[in-house]
Image (cartoon, rainbow, N blue to C red; front, side, top):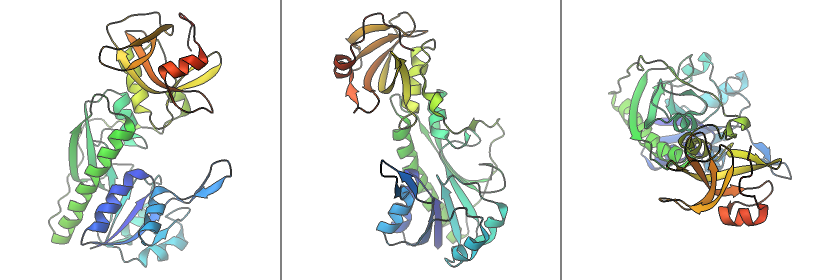
Length: 313
């Protein structure tokens, strides 16, 4: 079967690998336009576009898929089905007729749980114990279409958003490949999404990373894990914004919220800076000052030299 993929970030790469290695024909990749990045403001291709170039697969980078001038280019691929994964554009209904079987979204949540742009971080931030991947028929609504398949998985205790997204990407690739096989055999059946109230996974903002020391340590630990690799959890010390790249909750220890309580090693975790929280304490294990490389807690403290009892904001 001839398959096209619309994708941008690293989440789509396992799907591209799976289709490329299968007996199906990956006829083209539609990627986001190149972005300017770095000090030289060079144009950097998205992971999907870079993958296509490396594997000699035709790639397109339209400003918008729905632009009339792109329609002929896409139809020239002769795609029978298209998958959309980590693409970042809401497709207009006129696009859905461009393939024989339509467009299918690969979404890393158990729809209707966490519809929207950032389902993986919000699942961790909210303390969900399970998540998964759904492949659904793309329609007029945002992540509302009938489901073609679903895979559930537990969220591991120390898993970061980046690690969880990698796992879900692999599960989604296997699921999507099976759906192409079912389409080819004529056995695919769609089912409506669940009736529970949908959750909105809005796009993350830099301010979402601020650590509110009045919260309990378990919630702050989820914020550290859930906001990697962006925007990262952070606090302010002496007017400087410090990123926290790894932390552990210390539930059996108490201290004044936001105050630095010293350097110690946790019972089940590594060495870190102890900070009091609304309930329990948080052990800050890996930190990064602006313009500096990430450091373990002891090395960071040797440079910053916090005083015992100092208030962090």
